[in-house]
Amino acid sequence: MQHPTARVYTFILEFDGGTFIRQCSAQGLPDAVGVYLNSLSSGEAIQDVHAGQVLAAEWAGDVPVRIEGMRGVWCLSGICGERSALLHIVGCD
Image (cartoon, rainbow, N blue to C red; front, side, top):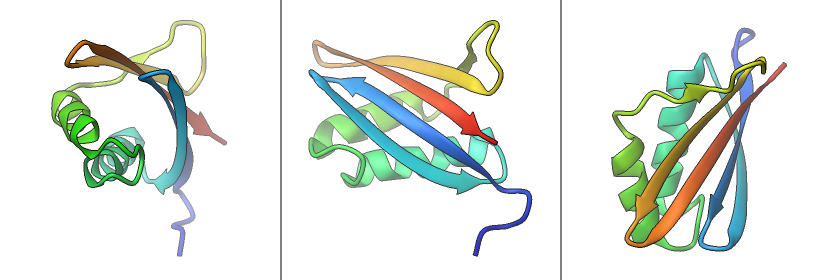
């Protein structure tokens, strides 16, 4: 059951030529990022489990950067081997 103050967050990952989209409900951005990172490291978010684990570990201590001029939009970037990754996070009202 979703808590009344929970917010839906959409995660859009651009990685290795693909776009991977997931949503989760959480009390705030840090909780939502934690849920997403768990899905990355378990292979739920992308099929390349190793890459998901590498990216989850890289982003585990990072704070998403708020996109200037936007409300409820953040991003993270990272590298897995020679492949770059860009994660957009959108808080949905």
